Image 1 (cartoon, rainbow, N blue to C red):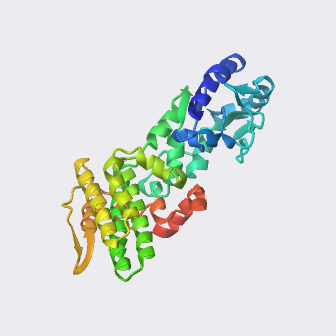
Image 2 (cartoon, rainbow, N blue to C red):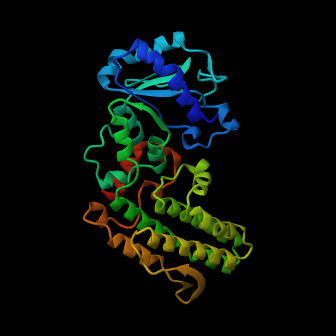
Image 3 (spheres, helix red, strand yellow):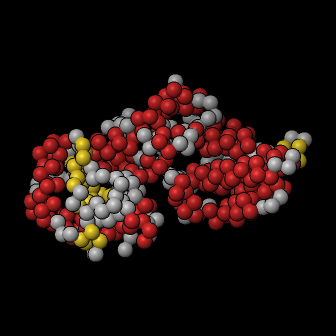
Length: 355
């Protein structure tokens, strides 16, 4: 049994009947969101060695939290079974401690936690409300944090506050999406000729490194065109493999990364760029006429990525991001883990970048 179903059953069989008995008037949401491979469906036997097991997040208002949360956590410790479906409900070898803070309560003895929705929003996005969320703020959200909040599962939602928040963050607004696509083409435009140039001067290792960077850029564009958030690096390839577009792109990327000659490497990547362009045109995003050919007078196979940048950015409607340089969102600017996992730091950096 995968972890998300284990936790769903734990809520349905143990937590919900108990809450109905001891707190029948409590209005709450029950979910499993945040960290954990099981939220993405990637957990396996290895995943069970840490941060895995039956767990449920109960989200309540601040007033309800102050009145009930800590007492209920303590009471549940006294009645909770030691295991569920053969899996211990305690925190065993979890490096993440149980929730404990002004608006979070948990215990080492079990995986039941209480939170406020506002605190969860703050921990993921450095915001306590999604009202008046603007395009510039979206650029400071890490995709892995957006995925963590919108994946997993909601088991119960009395007032639909959690559901509405997840719907609001389900994917980027169109202007933000177009800007990210334009910037992703910009990344490809910057380096696509270097695969050939490095190989031409005998730097095979350098050519391979650039090719790997571009393969990653192609994969990230695949997530964008499929309107899916990309997970962090451990599950990046696994998540990509689930995208419909991966079926056509993967053979090109494998050929590029396995090629022994730079000419084959650049041609395989160019085929991947062409697939991206055709897919972008098919899905109704801004169209451009893709052309694959030499890089000016040099014998390096490239695509007219600058035309894709221009066409896509021109389609952004009236928004502050229309006037930004073609640089990108947080994930396109940096892949530094401490930055992506710290939403307050993320927003500070983006404010410094764009003023």
